[in-house]
Length: 151
Image 1 (cartoon, rainbow, N blue to C red):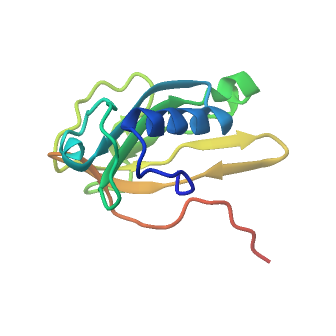
Image 2: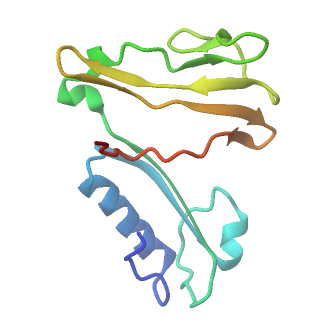
């Protein structure tokens, strides 16, 4: 999106570009895009409209898109839980995974650590430590997630 021109275009046009890029880069479904420019950016769930984006406008972008990994045949290899609570001990409830029903409330801290393990090839797990806030969540660590090669 950093290469897409915003100024002089309607929010709906930029939203269409965002959806097209998500599809181009492997998402099978785009559920919604948010493009809120200028005063429309004050609404976190603004549906892209006919407002023309002016040069210097702040533009809020959000999207929900799905990439169905199981279509690639990898679903059975996601064998690690999504995460677990962190408090007095290293691993404690609530465990984040299928079937967990405990409601998350502000102040709770837990790991988010999805992992995929391909037998005989390799495994990858990315772990973040997060806390629940009144407005959603906050990540404590800021390490990058991109793949890096080391010697």
